Image (cartoon, rainbow, N blue to C red; front, side, top):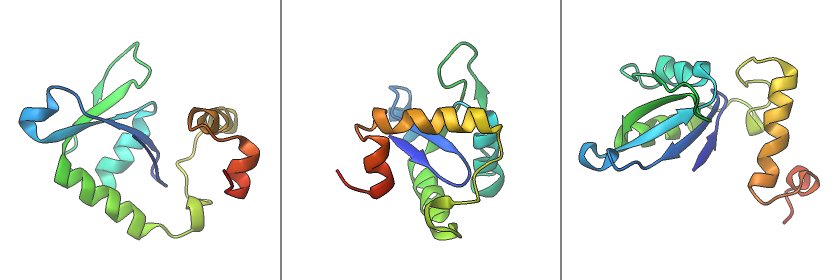
Amino acid sequence: MWITTRLGVFSIVFKPADLAADSLTVRARARNHLEALRDRYIPDLRIVESAGRDHGFRSRVHRQQLATAIADTMLDAAHPHGVGTAIAEPAPVRLHRRGKIWPLAGVSRRNAATGTA
């Protein structure tokens, strides 16, 4: 699943190795997104770099710890839709990433802006 927060964008998946540890794998394309998650909510988060992968940074997190962190990001949200609170990155990169998310979710940009299906 994709989670977009004021800290960054995360892909959360279940890998076979997660079963024994009761964990989930949190992946990000930008290291600073996982660093922000670590710095704010999960101090013992260990970030592993996976060169050549679509999501070059990942971490395994206990399910309950991740659920609590995600809930806390929602409770800490200061602005509707996180406006003005995103991690700073160059505008062309940010716009390129945001522009591609809606088609992946099966939503047109026009419908995403209005909230209609």
